[in-house]
Length: 368
Image 1 (cartoon, rainbow, N blue to C red):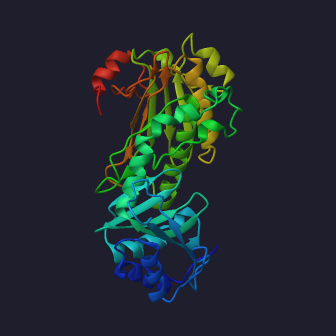
Image 2: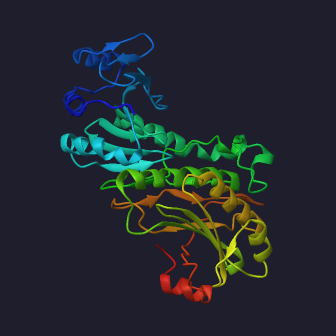
Image 3: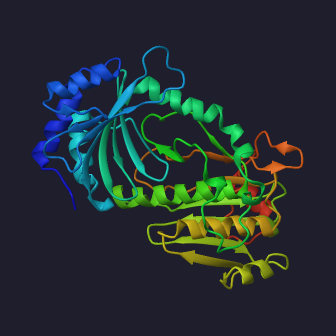
């Protein structure tokens, strides 16, 4: 485990708070590093005594940049188990205040907005803790560009990669080459207003993999919330033959579906276990998110939900943070092309409630 001394990290946080970042040009960031006594090398590497791997100055790749390209500074702090992330978050809160937002793609990012500067404490899926300071405007522009251009994604996917063929088809394909800024967000203020679209079942498989990874990583880092994360998949007619419920808790991932004449053969072939209450379930440990997401996509395809009729909603309170939101919607392609939005209504049926589906929808309400 690589770490930095507590006193050194506290001093770093104070330096980054006091540093005069304004334009985020390379010259400006290099001057800030020099003032802190850090040596900047020609390739952008920053030699910072006491850190596991120093820092780096990166181009921010702002698609709307006018004039000189902006940069951001990242500093490697430690490599830890997720449960130790709090040792770094606590002093950051002490020095920088209450975080503005939390978010994740397949990682965990905690952000503080301070004028034109954005400070981020990050935890990767490999346990790498880092600090990043960037231009708030460049971060917003990059997210906006990714969101605005996401409709081009389907054109880059090979035809044979659009649907996973079976539960063992877990390899990465052209369908995994998408650009999302995050899959979920939470906190006192949103990171952005973007809702990211999913255009195929293989795309859904990739996004679900990252969402499950990120939320479980955050459960380990911050502690779990009072309720598991539940994702509901169903068609607009709300029929039991076309419904699945994917649930993430701190200890496992569960996929559940109703056992009917139509779904029974598919559930048997995919290794589901009969629960004795009209439903069947399959379970995975939390570190097998890709396998769980693959079976979810395969099951949805086999019961006829690989079309624009697929709707997804979420429920639960999986993290100890206010305003948790899954920022993904399903826009699967149909015969008429990409649907304008398949998220037209919410149908969150607990799988244990086996009354008529229309009654369950009326009881819970059709909108979150």
